[in-house]
Length: 232
Image (cartoon, rainbow, N blue to C red):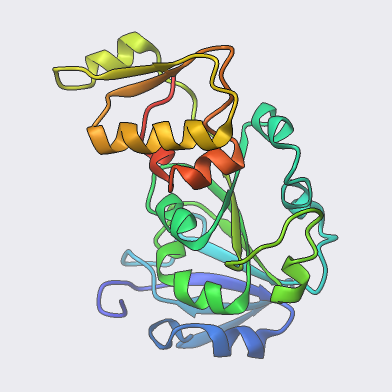
């Protein structure tokens, strides 16, 4: 990483020493900057100069879930509300890894220190600023009605649906379009999305009587396949 990257700023508010220990050896800071907001650690990042706005991760250490920006995580059961806000909550390490590898805009992570250490190389390659809220595992498990077994969640923006005409114009033939109607179970829709990806479907048309493929459980069951499948 150090050979191919020059710099990225990770802003650490709180326990700087603990977070520095948890970072991978290849991402250990080589220099340090002090700002009014806390400590900024200079880490490897793609490019020939420091472009903080284009390649940056802000790490915020917390001991509770009261932070205002954690509202989507505290309301995990309000999935339809999240969808109306254009947000999707992603759970599980494999699914979050696929999210970080996708083109979706990632807003934040809610993560334990050990998981951040493992995912840091993926996060710092992202083009947008991602806020990583780091909490102990026991704090993460305080989420109402939800037990986090893998120590990681993420919030991302649902991409706008393409028009059928634009999708067909940009896709090679033969086209394979899958349409669903009356599918109310998020698990079932997640399986359908995963099968669409396996079959190389051009896109998925979701009727008004079907649930959203962006529901948290549907995303998890799809194993992140929904991130790369055009949804109409």
